Length: 464
View 1 (cartoon, one colour):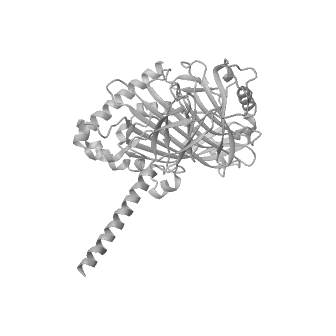
View 2: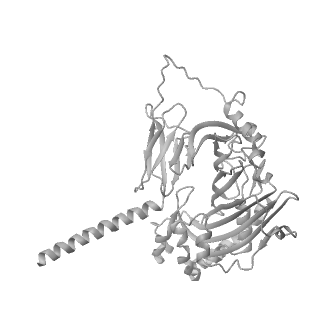
View 3: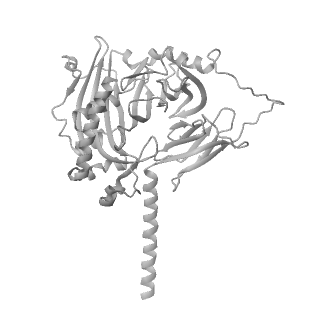
């Protein structure tokens, strides 16, 4: 009898540990991870620069650098990467979190039935270049899909700004981790470089935007605002000014894009063919649409331009951009910005208008030598798009462009749960648990130093 009870207990224990392990594995995979690797020619083993690497099914993509190296954030739900290059057969590789998170992809050259094939290196030319013709046609059809061609355009906007310590090594032997070892539990991963980060502050804001074409008027009504984490880090006026300048919303369809007092040439600018090299590099599916992948790089790496991809719908006469992925060349000096990564997503309305649904900007900043580097992310989502007149037309009265609701600071948890068009990551949702650090002398000194640094950054940025 006793033996039977012992066997029963052992069975229950085995089941418990198996289920626990399964849940831990599921939780681990749900967080996503950062994958690094290299792409090589399967025959010569030579690294392949400018190869395309795409996570599936999220369709997030990057290109390899001049040494064939790449780094890509694997989102929750991604199970594989697709590696492709012109003249080679694409390769799909399953991926999963490991202790190294590194892969090597070998691309086999495409085999053709030609008796002899002679390949000669040719110089890039705009003339008779299908990629240049493609981008010129895109620019000419810009007005066709412009939602602001309607008399009215309204939408809801949810914005989340996360501020974190960058390159926060959880295995380092330093004073902070020796005194506060529990911080290791809150370490997250940078979406740009894969470095470990420690989230300190999360700001959330909801608003409604109303646009009227004649007379041209745009009104933003802020309906909710909340802050969690260490408020002192981002509550100063100087810090707020700096963040607003750094995180300025990028309109791809503008001729010039201003970032930190610098003017960048948009890939859809009229002068873009003289500023960028364009390549049609792939055809992929985004959502339910077949899209051409238009890759672009500045002709001069040190010039103020972007590198990235435009995913352009092939079944749309307006040539709507479904997705954008952009970064800046490392060769330029963008006022303390070490890394810059922007993704945007669009949908098409029944009348052909392009509707932005997501705008995700991530930055890694290095203010001064000896100071902790910063990780900043602005994650913006858009919904409830409408071309009908707003219910309250008085919103267009007056001269103030931004209106603030009386109850913005009194929103309940239920309100924020429903307002988050884009849900928080697991680590972002836990940032409130470390709010008690505001009372620790070490972090108080650091936050005060950061305020002084941001004051200097704002002043210097204005001078530049």
